[in-house]
Image 1 (tube, helix red, strand yellow):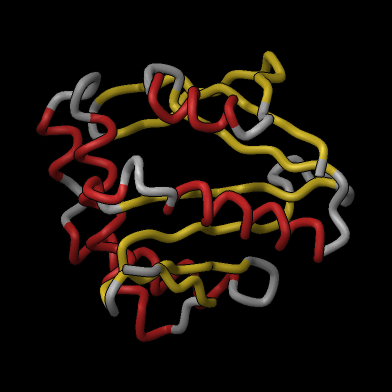
Image 2 (tube, rainbow, N blue to C red):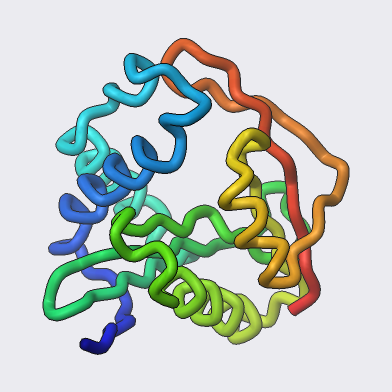
Length: 169
C-alpha cells in the first residue's frame, strides 16, 4: 500500500475538515476536555477550510495525502505570521490517527519543507500546543527547535499555551 501526496483542490476541503476534527480530538483529548473538542463539528471544520482556502489559496499551499484513494492527512503552509519575508509558516499537519507511525507525517513534513524552500523561504516556523508532547517530539525529530516564544489559543472554553518552533530550510 502506497501513499500519494498531491495539492489539494476545492473538492477536498470538506473531507479535510472532517479529518482535521478527527485528528484534533485524537491528539488533544489527553489534555483538553471533550466539550472543548466537540465544537466545531466536522461539518463546520469543512466550512472553515473552504472559507479560509478561498481567501488564502494564492499565498498558501495545502497538500493532501491519500492511502488507497482515501484522504488520510494534510499539511498547510504559507507566509510567516510575523511577516518575516524570509520565513514560511507551517500552519498545520494533521493525520488520520490510524496513520501515526506509518511514515505519513514524515512524508507531509518533507513535502512542506520542500514547498517552503521552493517559495524562497530560508527559515520555517510553526506553533504547537505546549501540552501536545507527541507533536513536539515529532517536530523535534524533524529538526525543529523551540524559539522561546509563547502564545495562547482558545480551544473551546480552554486557553491553551502554544510554543513557537523554528528550523533552517
